[in-house]
Amino acid sequence: MPAEPGTVRPGGRTARVRAAVLRAAGDVLAEQGFDGLDLADVARRAEVGKTTVYRRWGSVTGLVADLLADMAEQSSPREETGSVLGDLRANAALVRRTLADPRQGALFRAVIAAATCDERTAGALRRFYEVRVAEWAPCVEQGVARGELPAGTDAEAVVRAVSAPLYYQLLTTGVVPDAPAAERAARAAHAAAVAGAYVT
Image 1 (cartoon, rainbow, N blue to C red):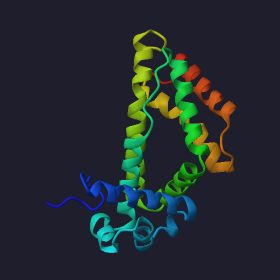
Image 2: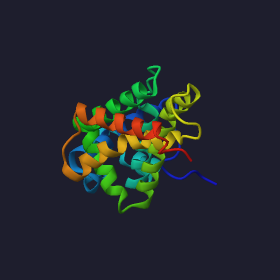
Image 3: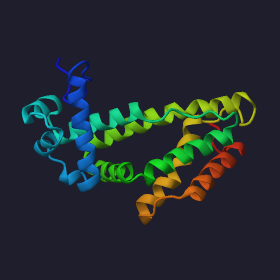
């Protein structure tokens, strides 16, 4: 059974084509939003054949799904500072930097908006966050092992609790979270975790 368009990871020569197309798609999303994303325009920007883009990704949602998969793969690895609070602060700072970035912030807003009305985009966005949360969850698990947090703490829930208020601020007010907001988010998640709020 053939793979669904946008799910095959090309290698070798074709990796350059994929990189160019995904970069162009990200630029369009950041500039014009999901509604402005057109495969022919992406092909023109990437300087590749239109048929190549249609054959490989098949649809706008297939292209966005691959873009999100690539972003998850390329995201910065977790930082380990030696304490749960330090690690959560590093995570919050990374989320804040991403949302403050003119291109990345606009791109995330466009994809999140599209995910509310397109199930394939929503699924791709969920997979993106599953990868990122799983990347940072060991920081919490190590904190449990060190005795900083109660046994049974849901590591992924703690990681999500760090970024949730930062995304909420951006999406509901349009204001990019600043460094103090990131610090508050990390400290709030840490305090709740220490108090056992995330024990399952």
